[in-house]
Image (cartoon, rainbow, N blue to C red; front, side, top):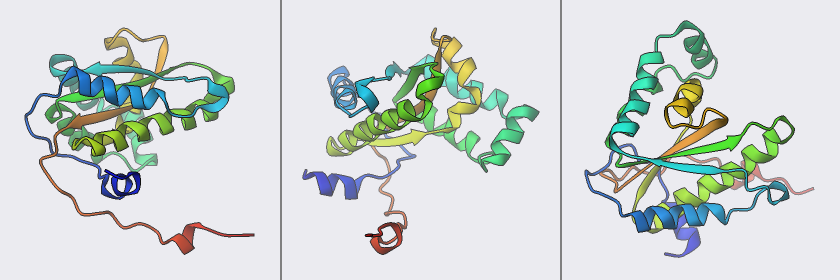
Length: 186
C-alpha cells in the first residue's frame, strides 16, 4: 500500500474478529514504532504486549475504578465518563493490547509525549498497512498506576494503549477539517 493511501485508510477500529495475530506481526509493529523520530533521540518508549487474562484484568481495573469519585471528576473534565465502559469492552475483544510506558521524567514531559505519539502513529499506520485494525486508547490514564503495578512497571508511567486485531467493521472516514482550516502561510 502506498503511504498516503495507508494514511487515508486508517480508522479507529472498535470491533475485532476473534483471530490470533502472530508474534512476528507484533514484532513488526513494534519495530516500526521504534523507528519513529524522538526528541533528542531519547526513544522514551517501552512497549508491553498483553493478551488474554492480563488484558482482561486491565479492562476490569478500568471498570472497577469507573465509579471512583476522584477519577470520575477527572473524566468529567475531559468528557470521558461515557467512554470507559465501551473502551474496556473493546480491549477485551481485541486479541492484542499494546501498553506504552515511559520513565517518569519531569524535564521531558512534552518532548517524550510527542515522541511517543509519533511511535503510536507508526504502529497504527503499519497495522493498517498489514490489514489490521487499531485503536489508540487514552482512557487508561485514569487507572495508569494500577495497571502499571499489575504488569510490574510501577516505576514507569503508562501513557497510552493500543488495541490491535483483524477488523470486524469498516467504519466510514470521520469528518476532518479542511486544509484551509488548519493551514496558514505567512
